[in-house]
Structures are given as C-alpha cells and as structure tokens.
Image 1 (tube, one colour):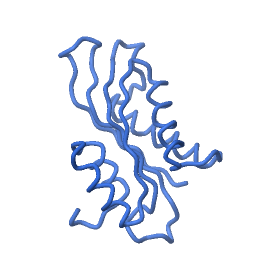
Image 2 (cartoon, helix red, strand yellow; image 1 turned 135 degrees about the horizontal axis):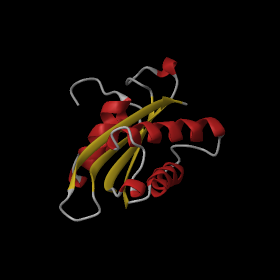
Image 3 (cartoon, helix red, strand yellow; image 1 turned 90 degrees about the vertical axis):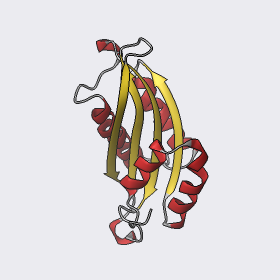
Image 4 (tube, one colour; image 1 turned 30 degrees about the vertical axis):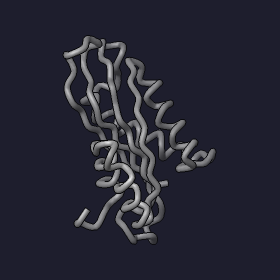
Length: 147
C-alpha cells in the first residue's frame, strides 16, 4: 500500500488477497488505525450472507449492539450485496448461488483523518452464478457508511 490507505482500499485488498498475505495486510491496516476482519460465506440465501457478516463484525468487536453501528453495517453490506448482484438483490429466488470472501473494516475514511469520525466498509468478493458447479463467475461489491 504505497498510496495512503483508505477504508475502501483496505476492505477490497483484504477480501481479494490470498490467505497467506492476510497477516501482513492486517498489520499494515492496524498501523494506520483500522480494525479488520475477514470471513467466508457461501449460500443461495441472501439472509445467510448478511447474517455471516453481522456475526463476524460482532465477534470481532467491530460493532457494538447499538442501533447506529448495526445500521451502518447493514447499509454497508446492502451496498456491497447490491454490487455483486448487479442491481437485483436476490439469490435463491432467481436461481443464483454465491461463494464469497468478505472483509469488514472500521476506522477513518482516509488514514490519519480522525476528525471525520469512524466509518465501516464491507467488501464482498467471490463467485456467483447458477447453482451448478462451473456456471459461476467472479463478482466484487463494496459498501462504505459512516457510523
């Protein structure tokens, strides 16, 4: 990350990077004031994808049980999901399945800019397609919201 890191850039890099590079990326992100987690989810049901991201955010203490934090996370996931579904926010009802890596990042919009408050970014990366092996293609979605 030679360019000053932003919350969205970190979220995207963490979601697309290999598992071997995860530790290095997390350390760089934390050095710039970001808290990060990464997970995997595969489902034909969109509710399971939302639930997996929310569970990871809570388990890694990236959000607390407060309305404004849960609301910011929900809208970040919704925006990222909108990106991977190409505008139709549905999976199983239109016979699509997804296998995704997700990342959640909390911190300033731009590294070092604490005056702007805290933000949440969610990136989704993986494959989507008909629920038949070999019929999928890559997708990427990103959502960023202020807490």
